[in-house]
Image (cartoon, rainbow, N blue to C red; front, side, top):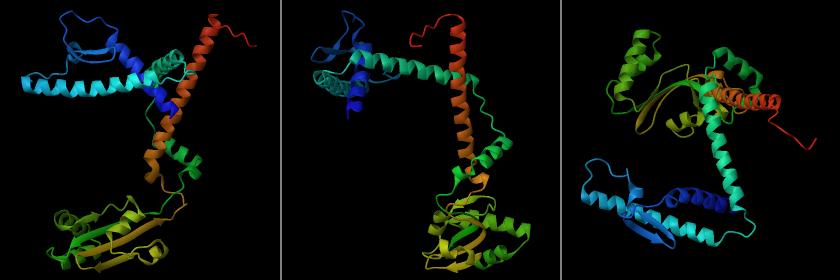
Length: 283
């Protein structure tokens, strides 16, 4: 709660300072006032798109004034309730320093971070951190087709399904694109087990009997289902790299970012020490 309060105070002071420090032209129109704070029309400059009608301008002004008054009231109440032990100046300095440092770090990352991660790097990282990628839920590779019972030529679909001919497979894919509610026909893709189970009739596919259901053809009152299992990994097993590749890539880049920033700090330290721009008095 205290952190939230101080954040409101700091942001209000910084944003408020931008609004109320600059002197206003004598002909500037005041739109609202809350205690000693005044909102002028000039502060809405740039908020009116080209071609805005008078009626639309009035709506924009009224909406902005309504929000501004409420923010100003919150700021005023926050100022009235500042704890006696709260050092606002220090908080503002710290917050300003944090913003400046964060912005510079973002610039460094954009300019210097190597964002290319090779397949060899991914594999090496994955092999070295397998425990970090243990599955929290089972996954599987499979085919799944879910087709309404009123779709045409379901018998032909079954023939394509049991065929090993590539042309028949292409025909089946084309059919599914037209008639099937769900069709998953990429045998290299891994899916969450629970999401696949939800597409089938209840209790048809459960983790304790998955090995006994390599291939299934079944129906309920609405759909015709075709399912074929290729591979299954249970909870707490190590997944294939392809399943966690994006996660691994993000971790690699995050570690590179941390190293880049730490190396930059050390380089700055060494440079400024050599230039006698640092004095440490605690040693």
